[in-house]
Image (cartoon, rainbow, N blue to C red; front, side, top):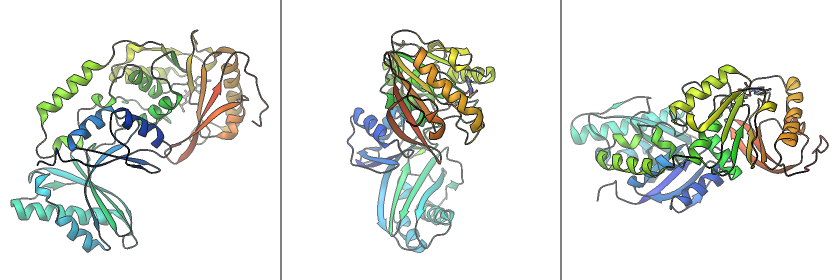
Length: 390
Ligand SMILES: C[S@@+](CC[C@H](N)C(=O)[O-])C[C@H]1O[C@@H](n2cnc3c(N)ncnc32)[C@H](O)[C@@H]1O
């Protein structure tokens, strides 16, 4: 049986805080949940299934297919165990691969050393079996082998994504403090918005939230935006079937939205970048862009979600100056967004208190190393401003 059709364990990694939303996605694609961690969810399927997962998953970073688990205490043992894997089945002798790792082993100070051991084992094995050695290097645009080595247990995966899935390929102009695409998708999914009602995104920056909302509302698989994945470089990759799968998924997407998506920013440069990014993502005609202060953003009747991702004084902007702006966001929610669910994504809870509205839900996310919250405000008719210590 080819390794493409053998069922195995699949680990999908993600940012901390994201697993609940990633689990929902995995389940809705018809895959089981085997286990979950702080920053990953485990499911099972074949290498062929990983193609579907790479195309559809919005909130995950990498789709890893488990090849082997083994015991290894030292780098030499690691080399030996790695050499036993029949790499010649997976990697062409004239191919290219890179090795990544996450290592928590007392004998290893620098995980690059573990990568070198793995790389040597793979190259030596293929040279012995095929008489020629594949190339290796740091680029992750071809085959990627991932080692997870914790204590005495090693797990070796094929990283079927290659480049992380957050690199959708549409953000040509990132601007300052952009939100990662996968995090933006998780934030939107956590609001429950799937296309009904409007999605309003003042302070849109480079447009990540609006673009991800459009992809969600149109049921478009974000992975279709990319043409390259790690699995495409493995031996036995069936390109014709991959093309059929992509065509089928493309044909199943919607070509109209039920609600409106409105994205504004005070910076003309940001709006121009957001428009270009949306164009690259093929969703520009579904987003109404505008240059204005957040408080002037049009909010149509009918309800939906309003999501703001302001600066939070960690990476840009001054906290003092931002206090007034956060207070203004509370006014905007209260006065202009009645009937909507209001959300603020911020890494600064002190500033968030300035909004002065009662939070209904607080969802923990991480934007890189920064602990953030997505705060939900219920903006039903007559919601009250609360004291700043809420
Ligand atoms: C943290 S960035 C948003 C990043 C965005 N989520 C992305 O992925 O690119 C905050 C944005 O708020 C905008 N902004 C700051 N003050 C504003 C105001 N008073 N009205 C509207 N936009 C404002 C900035 O120009 C910046 O683009």
